[in-house]
Image (cartoon, rainbow over all chains, first blue to last red; front, side, top):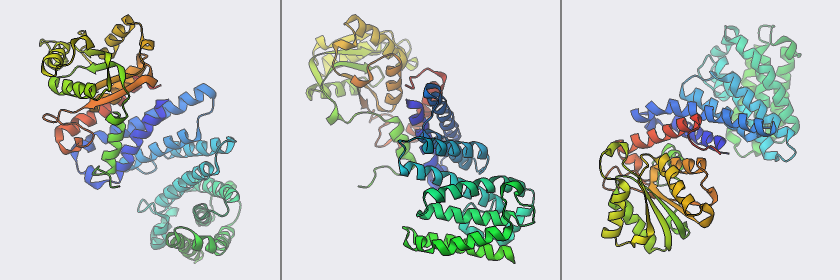
Length: 253
Length: 202
C-alpha cells in the first residue's frame, strides 16, 4: 500500500526543507513546499483511512507518520500548534496501537511515548514562553516569560499539561530506566507545578497542590541524576535537570 | 561514504522520483516498453546499449510507443522516428520492434501497449518486462503500470537522460533552474493524480 510510503516521502521532503536555509532561499522550492506538506497530510490521512477500512486497525507507524506530517506542516508554515489537536490525537493513537499490538517491539512502544511526550513538551514550552522558544531548557533563562502563563494563553496550556503528566507517568512505569522518558517526566512535573501558579490550575485533572508537584519534580531530579549522568547525552540531560531545578526554585519564590 | 547530493532535501526528492534500476541489476528481459519522447537518438542509443549487454533478449518484443506528444502535435509519430533511429542508426534488428502509434501521453503509452501485449498472449507469456523512459518520469510510469494491471513483480525500469538538453538525471537535476522546475512540477503532479485516482496507489 503506497499511501503511507508516498505520504512519508512528501513529509520527509518538508522535514529536510524546514532545516535547510539554503534551499529555503530559492523561490522555486518555496513555491512548491506548501503543496508538498498538504499532500503529505492528505496521503497519510488516506493511509490511516484505508488501514482502518481493511482491518479496523491502522498501524502505529502510520499514525505516527501522520502526526509528524502535521507537525512539519505547522513548522513549514511557522505556526507551531496550528494542528495541535490533530498531532496529539495522531500520536495518542500511535501509542494506543503500539500498546494494543502484542507483536509491537519495545522500541516501537518507547518511540511512540517519546514522540507524544516530545510534542507536548515542545508545545507547552512554546505557549508558556509566549512563542519565544520550544526548547524546554531555554525556559531557565526566560523567567519573565513564564509569568505569561497567567495571560490568555494559559487556558490552552492548562488543557495540555494534565495529559502530558498522565502520559509521562505511564511512560515512566514502562520505561523507568530511560533517560529521554525521564526528562519528559521531570518536565511534566514542572509544568504541573507551574500550572498551579495562581491557585487555580487544571483543577479536577491534577489533584495535587503546587508544592506536591514541586516536591515530585525535585525528588525526580535527585533520583534520576544517575540516569542522566550515565546516559548517552549527558550534557543535554544535565541541562534538562538544571532547568527543572531552576524552575522549581523560581516557582516557590 | 559521502553523499553525492548537496542537501538532504535534494536527496529526499531524488529518492522519491528517480526509481530506475541500476543497469547492473537489470535482468535479461523479453518484453520491452519504450516510452516515446522527443529524445529519439538518445533513447535508441540506450536501447542499443541494453541490447549489447544482453539486458534485452535476442528474441524479445520491443514495443516503441507514442504518436506525438502535445508539444509536437502534427509531427511524425515518435514510434516511427524511434524505429528508424534504432534500425538505421544503431543497426538493431527490425524483427525486435512493434510500433504503437496511438498514445499521446504516458498513461496511454501503457494503455495501448497493454492491448498489444494482450494480442501477443498476455503478460504471462513474458518473464521480465523492462520499461525505458525519461528518468524523472519513471515514478509516475510505475504507478500507471500498476493501475493498468502490469505485473509489478516482473517490472524493471531504466531511465534515460537528455544530457545535451534539460539534463534531468538523478545525479544532477538540481544544477539547472529548468530541471528543478520540471522535477518539482512532476512531484506535485504525482501527488495530485494519485489523490484523484488517476494513478495506482496500491
